[in-house]
Length: 373
Image (cartoon, rainbow, N blue to C red; front, side, top):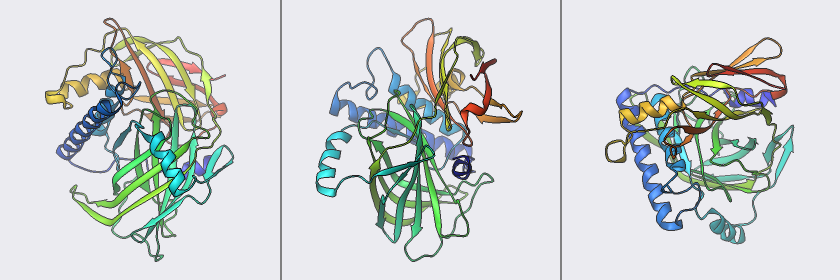
C-alpha cells in the first residue's frame, strides 16, 4: 500500500501563478461556494451540514477556510465543496436507467473499482483506486487518449503536479451531505500514455462510506500555462460510478493536551491517525470573531483570522525507526463560532505519503506531542 500511495502522493506541490491571479481565483471560488450554498438552502431548507443555520456556520466556514487555503497554496483543480444535495434521488433514477454502479475489490485495504470507465472526446477515464478512513478518502482516476498517443503541452512542478484542471468537477458519495477537498493531476509513469487525477475529500461529519455509491462527473479537460491562461484540451464529459469499499486503518490517539494555535492557547479534544490523514478536533480559549469580508468576499482580515484559527503550521509524525514525516498545514478545516468565549475546530490533514499508522511513535503539533499506542 505504501508503494501505491508513494506514487499517488508525488503531486503535492504548488503551481506558479502571480499573487493577483491566486487572489482572483480564490475570490471566484468563494463567490461560487456562497452561491451554491444559497441555491442549496432554497432547494432543501436547513439540512445539517448543507445550509448555514442561525446558530452554527459550520458548512460556510469550511468553504471560507478552503478558499483561504487556496490563496496561500493554490493547487491545480483548486478546492471543491460538495453538498451532496439531491444525490440520493438522482442516483436512484440514474441506477435504474443507466445501470448499477461498478463493484469494488479491496486489496491490502485499498479499494479497486472494477470496470468503472467512461469515454468521450477521444479520452477514456478509469477509476483506479479509493483509499479512505472514517473522515477522509482519496480517489485516483487515470486518463488515457484512445489513439494511444501521450498528452502534449504538459509541464510539472518540482513535486510532479501537472498544469491541468477540469472545467467541471463533481465527485460525490450518496448520502453525504457535506464535504470539502482538493484535487490535482500527476503522471505516475511517464513511459506510458496515461496521466492520473487525484481527488482528496474530507467529510463534514465522520461517517462510514463503505457500500455507498461514488458518482463522478467531469467535464472539459483544460491546460494552464505559466501566465494563468487556460486552453481546452478536450471539450467532453465523463461520468462513472462505483461502490465505495476500503478498509479503515484509523487509530484513535489520546487527547486532552494543551496546545497553542496562532498564538491562542487551547486543548486537543480528539485525534485519530490513518494511512492517509490526521483528523483533529480542538478548542481554542478565544471566540472566533471572524470579520465579514466585503460583500461576502474573502477579505484580507477574514483570511488572516481564519488562518490564525486553523493553520497548525508544520505537523511532524515521529516514526518508530527514528525517521520523521512532515505535514504542512495550509489552514483548511471548519470551526463553530457559536460561543462567546471559545472556538471549536475540526480539521483533517492529508499526509504527503502513505504510512502504516502503527509505525508512528508520536505526533508533534501546536506545541504538544501526542503518543501513538
